[in-house]
Image (cartoon, rainbow, N blue to C red):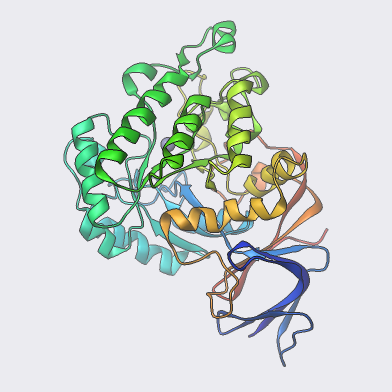
Amino acid sequence: MPIVIKNGRVIDPASQTDRVADVLIVDGRIAGVAPNLASPRAEILDATGMIVAPGFVDMHVHLREPGFEHAETIESGARAAAAGGFTSVCCMPNTKPVNDSAMVTSYIVERARHMAVVNVFPIGAITKGSAGEELSAIGAMKAAGAVAISDDGLPVMNARVMRRAMEFARSYDLPVIQHCEDLNLSAGGDMHEGVQSVRWGLRGIPAASEDVMVARDLVLAQLTGARYHVAHISTRNAVAMVDHARRHGLPVTCEATPHHFALSDDRMAAYDSNYKMKPPLRSSCHRAAIVEAIAAGTVSAIATDHAPHPGSEKMQEFERCPFGIIGLETALSLAIEELVAPGKISLNRMVELFTTGPDAVVRLGRGTLAPGAVADVTVFSTEVSWTYDVNQSNSRSRNSPFDGKTFRGGPMATIVNGEIVWRRDRA
Ligand SMILES: [Zn+2]
């Protein structure tokens, strides 16, 4: 059935559109963006007072399937994505088995085709088993649908291996995504190294563990010419180095997570494992640098690093519990509250960070409302008031520091391939 999204403010950075108009969807494609569109038998979605944007892309999630279905599945993770306004997600390879072969990549693509309400694009591992030694079957994974390579969570420590990976990635025209952490510098750390870690008596992860890896990789990116992307950037020096590389014309990009621009280590609930992630929440000075880098254009994408862990694992003492939080359902609201509402960035820039920004890295061919484009659409409001109840989450996991928080602004409806896959309940 055709859909007409009526009367919304259409923001499409790819076509430099920002005006009140209707959006007509026919046969899963955008058929037109103009005032007063109509189509017989069309379903009407009233978007008066709302923003209508290209479908949001989250280029960094963990869906946990295959292997860790007690934490998340492709089906549940995709529903959480839809409820967060995301129409496409890229899933990291740290499953069991690791996505280091065309067989696992194909399995994820097939499962997603049957189970997922949003588009799922796998990211292949850089090395076999993400063990950091032998390169995985990069070409075969790309042929099976991988859109990037990364050993996220297990950084490639050996510079020679990383150089070879970048050379291969360049020949296959894939971006290399690095979780930047020198494991020798961060070893044993549970939170950002600084005043707060001393105060709490917890072992610190120094900012330098990220900076050292970014510095090394930028040298290798220059050597190889590979497209290189820093995942979840979190330090002042790291953004300065990425900015420097970009100014010198290197094809280097980075993403920031909502928790790194919204929170800092002085705003953590003490010993609450829902504030434990990698990279850790940094000090407010680093947080300010991330916000500045988002505003300045150094950061290309907002990505959640949605990392589900079941309660049984997260409800251990701080030092023992795993790193990571879920984030798909709160990302847009945090961006509105922390970046747009205080005037750090415009609404148009925020939409870029969720659409054309990530799409320029992983090249999904999504992220626009141009006529003929696949009808992936995110409808959201900057006014709606809603409260996040993690126990109502679509995710199988509950590890969020934002449980109980009332937000102003959030997703209203999510359309994937011309189908409405999620709508906010009218209270
Ligand atoms: Zn990571």
